[in-house]
Image (tube, rainbow, N blue to C red; front, side, top):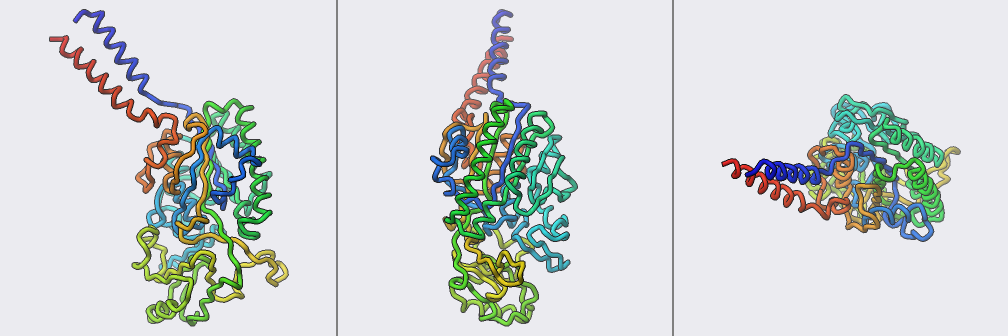
Amino acid sequence: MPSHVRCSCAFIVAVLLVSGCHCDDNRKLLVFLIDGFRYDYMDDLQNLPGFREIVHNGVKVDYMTPDFPSLSYPNYYSLMTGRHCDVHQMTGNYMWDQHSSEEFLIGTNPSSRLPMWWDGSEPLWVTVQKQGKKAYMYYWPGCEVTILGVNPTFCEKYVSSPSLKNLNDAIENGLNVLKNDMADMVAVYYENIDVEGHHFGPGSAQVRTAVRSLDMAFQTLNQKIKEKDLEDELNVIMFSDHGMTDIKWMDKVIELDAYINMSNIIKMMDRGPVVNLWPKPAMLEETYKALQAAKNMKVYWTQEIPDRYHYKRGKFVSPLTLVADPGWFITENKSTLPYWQNDTGEPMGWQHGWHGYDNEFLDMRGFLLAQGPAFKKNFRAGPIRSVDVYNLMCNTLDIHPLPNNGSWSRVEFMLTGSADSIQPVLLYSCVLAILLVLLVAQF
């Protein structure tokens, strides 16, 4: 083969190889975790211009199914590790380690920051740091904890129900560090939607007002992305950890002391949809049988917990797990119900919304939106699960995901390159054919 032909073939091979590379050395990701935002809270897009613009410019999933239990901390970690609760071991908002007697109290007590609760799996921000990138976290629960020996580059510690000012400041500061190449990933947590849903119920005027306020913050986000010329380099993914359902206290309360002697219980963790009980060993079977008389609640030995919950192998799971039917609330007795606005010592505020129920219950569904150069525009995606989000975030950051329980097939079609997924096979087949021609020509 003449040398000029060989050179031409070599040039074609190089062009094909380069065209097949979808590398991006400057991938940036902005993540929002909106606690308690049910999948249907944004149905009225006509009156939510911030959300509407994101939906038009990006991807909206039909809904996202949380992990069981549909509580905050278990799903914070499922979202950020791609693993089910019985793998990452964050199995509740309230946990107890029987061996050490240490307690995890929804992240508020000093013992909640012990490595034993967090080192069950590696969250994304730790992987980001390990791979030489930088993560900035704003109000994200647990970002102040040293996990597997690693901390994020920056952590603005969680404060109870971050305000709209906190959110807007985090948006401004986060966009600035991304623009100035100080961060590769920024993660922002916002709790107010969940708080209002608990206090007033998911269908309340207060929740609708909170959603409109959040929409205004996202209008600002969209404008600032344009002002800072980040549209072509920043991907934004926003999601919730779970939904919310109505509860009616006094009408739908299961009082445990009506069925068992609470003095036979060594430890009880949490109230509500899922309760963990550690009875005295000699009273375990008697307690189990007595609780089976309670209606609107299922009682499980550990080995009886349904496999689909991906829960029973968690090391902090109790010998007996109680799961309420949707809308019902389990507590020791009505006097221990978690009222709010209790400064006077008298119960003044009745909760009207809760979550934590069977994760397949429709009201527990969360949401996911995404926009940016990696995502298709005005694209409606099918349902996903919380463990799927991890792979999506890893892809936008160009990070190889750790082994996880998520499904790539449920999220890959959201990405701009997904329609061309067959092209690399064809491309490298062509390259191989040309290389064979060159090889044969040498003889």
